[in-house]
Length: 595
Ligand SMILES: Cc1cc2nc3c(=O)[nH]c(=O)nc-3n(C[C@H](O)[C@H](O)[C@H](O)COP(=O)(O)OP(=O)(O)OC[C@H]3O[C@@H](n4cnc5c(N)ncnc54)[C@H](O)[C@@H]3O)c2cc1C
Image (cartoon, rainbow, N blue to C red):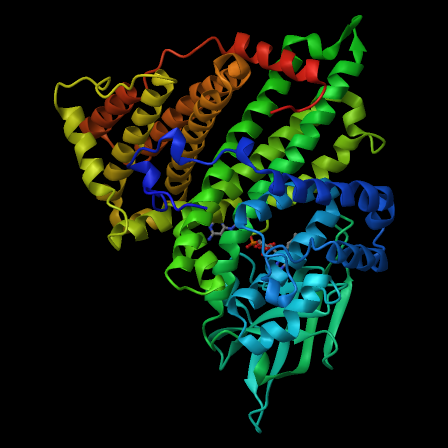
């Protein structure tokens, strides 16, 4: 793929503009990528769905068999280079496969933990011997992997892990002692990537084989959802791990843990979108089938609002997810062309877009929860029954807001990483923030800078959303300085402003590009979805901005900032009720999610 001239750096979207031509949209997946996705879908439909009930009852042997079957098809090796038996697919394809895998419900997690957090640390941080030893087996599923970071006393604060690794007297082994908790694939893995403290405080990764004496597994956790995936504690009692199995460098385990998380987060976003599309389709079908008051419930405005809103949010976050995916892929290709290794390239690219990865994890998981919650409501009493799909979807979805960093932690990370970027000079946010302050103090009306062409109003709104964020964040940082990091509520408001900007801009650019490809008449519903999303996004942003300013500013300063915010978030809006009715009509006519 040709590297684009202008790739925006991570978070640069806040201070720069992107054109529709510069982004990738899901409608542009090529035939090969679609064929891979169809192959995965076919496998799930034929092999996984028919045995779903057995998986839900913890049939671990079946999970292993299915992993091996997926491996035979190449589905476990899509990120692994060919020299290690993988299919070496690009990042866009891997993200599409993650989305499709969500159809496998809990087994998606079994596969995802194996191919993601289980395999990637070895792929990206393993030395040549480790890669040659483990990757071929991981690609075929003959070896099954898990990732052990969390402990009973260290979850969000992962680096506070207590598991110890002590070098043996002969210098040949590290002796591991400790306990890990909530380990996905814990009950079936042959290979564990384990983090432990060497000499008390050198956080380090290790590759630990299940056969090593002293490693034992706890019982399967009794979970709220995703019951078909194995989750248990793993205990290490004087486990002798050969020094050759140190992963990466001693004391540099945090690099492994955090870098893998960037990829995990954006993948979680894609998986959530896949799950949400399935639930939206169930909701639409039920709304068509179920009659009350002699009408299908899908003909009632209250239900149409829900159906439309499910679709709008899915479409919007999907737009942002694949926009960021292609950015990551482009930077990866650029780094590869500069001579970086396969691992360094993808990790470097994912680090560049770590802010986008974190916000997409939050946005994706929250769209999924919104969609299942409203889906359950559309099902009424049947939503509460285990006979219908919603109860299960509701329970299965909930975990996504908790793992790969809770949504609170990810929200805070968005602002923390943004400030660090600004301080390191990687992103100049203060100059544009000052410019907005100047603009507001001058007599120039905030309508200045209106754009022409497709979605001119929405693009103008987004420009102003950026200004509103820059004004609010700039003033907040200037006032609170270091104290900001302990004002978590403010960090959350600011983080949600960033997310609304990114997703709103992405949905506008996607639909604009789609119209360029398919013509305006073919995209009227997508245009409706875009306009409704932007209209709601600016309302949310205005509220978050006000809440932020009121949290610390007083007197004239508060009045001035609130007045600036009002000017920047002034928007007449559209008739969203009618737009949602049109969207719902398209969905009920299609009898499925169809965008
Ligand atoms: C089904 C399942 C599968 C999992 N799979 C794996 C796996 O394969 N490998 C693995 O290593 N781990 C795994 N985990 C663990 C998961 O990553 C952690 O549960 C998660 O990181 C949260 O940690 P915790 O549960 O200790 O919650 P805590 O960290 O105790 O958090 C509790 C609450 O406090 C909030 N909080 C914590 N710190 C702060 C703070 N500084 N500021 C504000 N709020 C804060 C959190 O957001 C959360 O709402 C899994 C968990 C589950 C439930």
